[in-house]
Length: 340
Image (cartoon, rainbow, N blue to C red; front, side, top):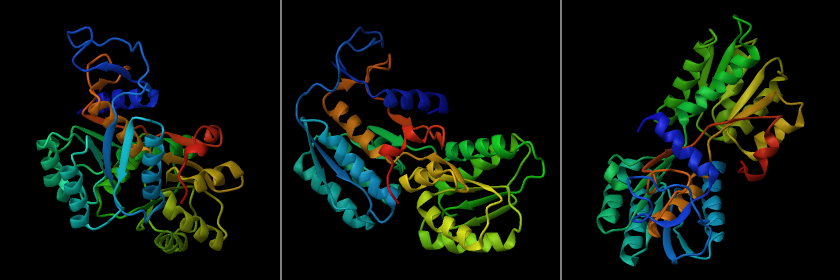
């Protein structure tokens, strides 16, 4: 799937308008046309099983909360939520239970995409469509649709914003506070950041990696500030660890730089709103992915289309946008943000 196609899918989701028209109807020739009715109208009741990792992180807690809230918007959705777990075998058992119960669809954010692939394939082979959220399976046949955040795009958005703010200074010192370095998502974010900075002739001068926790964020940032007496801009990959990052900055009494966050927590947005913080922006990594997964599962189970696409059916792969939130547009995002 190309990036261009992925953004088409994302746009359709943002529009949030879908058709009640069955997939096997329409104008034919691959063109369904615009919807004549709202998808919000009640249809056949569908039972959706939902499983995700444990809510040990603000973003992850927001994932399940958003999924529950989305399901409550529909009278025709019965959502069965398994207890969040970081134990792969337990999550596999949860999916097996959904299969044995004969649910109409499964929305699955796997703790480990590769480890959950076989049981997802089992569900698909049993005729139960699986919506894969955030962490991909290693076999495309294991899901009917996949919905993802854009980790590379996060880095690009953060880098482009920093270029706008300090790019006129060719000697600007840029620092990066990454998440867990061994994870592909961290590597993708860093690559996007590097590529965007290169567009304005900047690079990363100082880099540390935390572990997506408050404690690790504070520890590595204290080390970073000690090693770098002058900084012009910082990108911190994750707003949860950003709580610790901001604490370390306050403890060091440093304020000569601007800072950009990552993920889009309410805490970060409140800092941005305050107008007196080094944190001037954050880049969204949508915690609403599972909520979108619930909407897609309902569509697929009810055999409907996405009305804002000309083609029939529901896209197989959707990559969501990674917009930058600043003081100018924070009011558009803070109401639906998760809390660290």
